[in-house]
Length: 280
Image (tube, rainbow, N blue to C red; front, side):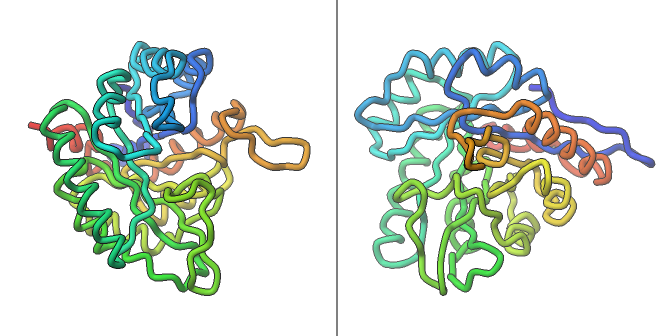
């Protein structure tokens, strides 16, 4: 995998992973990879129709381009997940369930920890990414972000922050029921920064990142990587992001702004290698 190394005024600059979702078509892969994207993510939208040849070809194309493929299954039934991983063989499997520490939430967390532990046993070369919920900047809702992350540390190779929608301290419907992501809203960066400082594994900052704010986000949070979906999508005639359609000019600017921010940070870690060493 090609990492992003940028020149800095003094010393060696940091590298910051760039990750892009949702790439579902093999024809979109090569132009995206040519921009310097490190992780190219795709989504399996249905447990009932998990076997999609076009999506499998997309994963293979990412790997042929020398990048890491990341795959989100929007389901967590163990046997279906195992069949999915056998079929697609991605570099990273990414789980993004909406997590909480309520009574039913604890049960879900325990079940997902068991699943991730079994994935680690069955697929020792596969990295596991776990989304960690964080509220919006003005939210009063308690997401239990840090305790949840601590629960999943031992069975994850990356954390990814993502935004949970809430109003008046209460959860609002998420764009995909039961999961976090694709809100187009930034998360509470102070909480994300605290997660970065405490976490023993690399943390990727996500949630409403775009060419307009990724520089500031990297400078403030100092994550191992950054992730964008809606913030680099094409817009329809009403200015709304179009799912699965990327704006190549915005992607180019996103990478440029990431590199500009990385050039101002000290090189303190090799993030993908750090995640990989957890398998050894």
